[in-house]
Amino acid sequence: MMAEKIEETLAELLSGARPAILFDAMRHAVMSGGKRLRPRLCLLAAKAVGGNEADALYPACAIELLHSYTLIHDDLPSMDGDTVRRGRPSVWAKFGEANAVLAGDAIQALAFSAAVRAPRNAGRIVAVLAEAGVGVVRGQAAELNGEGDIGFVYRHKTADLFMAAAVTGALAGGGSEADIERLRTYALNLGLAFQHEDNLLDGDSPCSREEAWRKIADFTSKAISALGGLTGDTAPLAALAEKLAVRSA
Amino acid sequence: MMAEKIEETLAELLSGARPAILFDAMRHAVMSGGKRLRPRLCLLAAKAVGGNEADALYPACAIELLHSYTLIHDDLPSMDGDTVRRGRPSVWAKFGEANAVLAGDAIQALAFSAAVRAPRNAGRIVAVLAEAGVGVVRGQAAELNGEGDIGFVYRHKTADLFMAAAVTGALAGGGSEADIERLRTYALNLGLAFQHEDNLLDGDSPCSREEAWRKIADFTSKAISALGGLTGDTAPLAALAEKLAVRSA
Image (tube, rainbow over all chains, first blue to last red; front, side):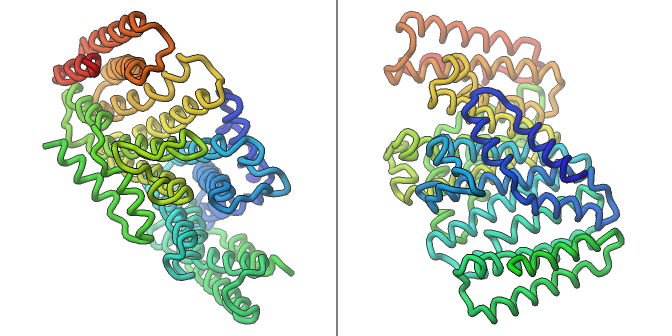
């Protein structure tokens, strides 16, 4: 039922009315049946440190909002120029380019409105989210301009947001510094496995299939190892890593 | 010397190195000799509640960063299509459209990194900044799509950020709730006077010159009246309102 809570809370955060076209564009982007992988990771991190998933609800929504806005801007004609996202028109294709820029901008601001409502460690959670917010853009800019190696791009474009999800969840759940570090390591490796697999599925992997699978297995195993020492329930996080590792199968 | 502190702190916040083109674009936008009106307003609000300007330094920089990112995105070809800003090439004209989108996105995230470093009331300051961040976009979207009257556009496009500057400054300075309300009213009227005057100077005022000047005088006088009851030094805020009211003279 936490999955429903996430949908409800996102809908509530996006319930603005004026101007209608802006909020329609924002809802079109966010309420589009995404897998909600990052918010789930955030909630499970709170549980893994022995905390309550409910305490991580706002950070979880904040992470999803941050992720959503990057997709809107990624799809723009000046970026990837994608007209379809999750089987529906992308935001710019449906609402125009200017409204897509603005909808993304407003969703990023809304992510911080959500993050600061965390019932515990709100200041640190905002700081982590903001750092990840700069980080994902660094990854995208490195890829776009061909600056920085593939490790830099994967680390920032994908893993930064996975790490922010896990760390903000751990902070919201009241985890110790050691537990936060464990979850950061878990999420870094999960993010790297995820990005390698994404590229493999898209057919644009920088390495051979065999090499890519070896890396995915390696990152997945490192992610699962990092969970050792956590006192809360880590089984769902281990299962999540295993499930992601065989997405294509 | 607080003016220098603002420049120093902005430069420090923007001191990232990789990828170089992203941080170059960010610095090009922010370190471009703006008037720093909004951060000055933030610092003076801290003083007006009897607090220290230095305590409002990070919120002041956060407000300027938020303002800067909106200018980058406003200038985009899909928005106003301006190639020049403050006598220099706009960010997209110099670094390309995609990099301008990304530089604006990273600067918005950085604004929240700055805001959360406030030494007092950081959580409320982040919440106010985030609300203004959604607000300015609502104003721009209303104007762009011709949704909402001129009052709605002025209120959100301009006054929301003025109010956030004053309120975050008052919060950082430790002001009472009553003082925060006084400064919010001051900044709302200052923002409305500013926007009416901007349009008059640009020659696209929605009312006659006489009517516009009457409104500017009226908003300025309301702004100054709102300062009554504040216990700190309000003279610089009164002077600022008077100076803005005669910008064109």
